[in-house]
Amino acid sequence: MICDVLELFITFFKIGAVTFGGGMAMLPILDRELVDRKKWTTSEELLDYYAISQSTPGIIAVNVATFIGFKRRRIAGGIVATLGVVTPSVIIISIIATFIANFEQFVWVQKALRGINVAVTALLVYSVIRLAKKTVRTPWQLLFFALSFVLVYFFKVHSVLIIVGAALSGILIAWAGGTLRAGTLCKEAAAGEPPVPDCHAAGGAPVADSNYAAAGEPTAGRHAEEEKQ
Image 1 (cartoon, rainbow, N blue to C red):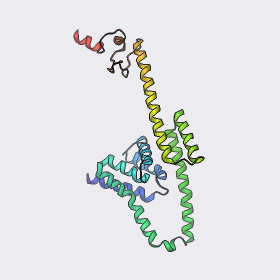
Image 2: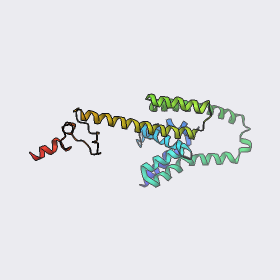
Image 3: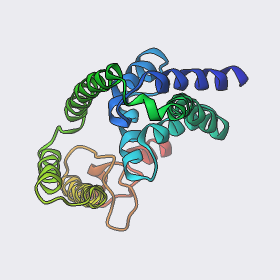
Image 4: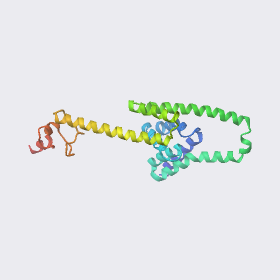
């Protein structure tokens, strides 16, 4: 227990210490450290954590750390992982704030910050491409992607409205698709097609064998008849 919690803190401390550019720029490092090395989560779960973190208050990196920590060691893990990822920033910012009056005047500091900004831009582009490859796979997803970009870039629509609208649209599409699929499967069962485990009778009871259902026999089907024999 203690070793696992300590490992959580050290892991997220290292991530927080070497990451620049915020939550999106952290995605490649998180993916390499948490998915490839530690095997604490999967790439799909990590993307889900990012999506949820973008839809909830707070910093993306902190929210993701909380999710991973809670998954590993519940409340204690969530607290420790969160402390681990924010501690490096607190230390560095505290040191810089002490000397902020003279800090910005150094030419080498200005050059370093410009170089960091370029590197962060590259990390953000890489993260966007990686996310797009894993999430934009269907025509609907491509439509949401293009529409969201147009609304944000050209019409300056607030990102919260984009996220809420995309979430509601995804729910409606999934619900409509599931309803249509269930109706199609039930029609196939009534026509004597091969058994379909997901199909339900009109009264809501599952149909175990479509051939028996089509013939009007009890839905227990072949298994009940075999037990009688």
